[in-house]
Length: 102
Image (cartoon, rainbow, N blue to C red):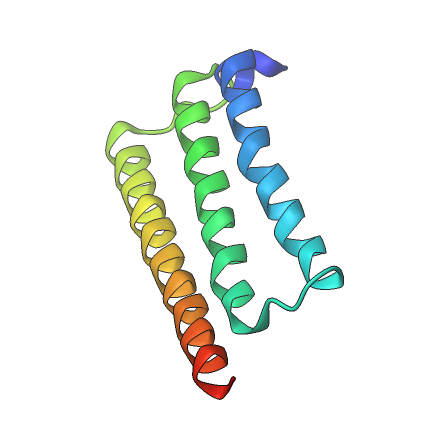
């Protein structure tokens, strides 16, 4: 079954963003994340989707057409980068607001 997703290495690489997503989902129970979580959780979902699309492209289960796979991977990568940048901007704004209020 691991070969469906491109082998053991791709499944392991897919587990890394899923672990980050799990950490982001459980983090608000430990610390206050405010609005930045709204951006980081979808960003990690985009990253997991990107790894899944590239794994399926290299795997044996589904033959993803070359143009569809490449365009979907590009959209997911842009989504990941954009959402991470927006989340970091929210964290930066929160840091500036807390520094100016103290």
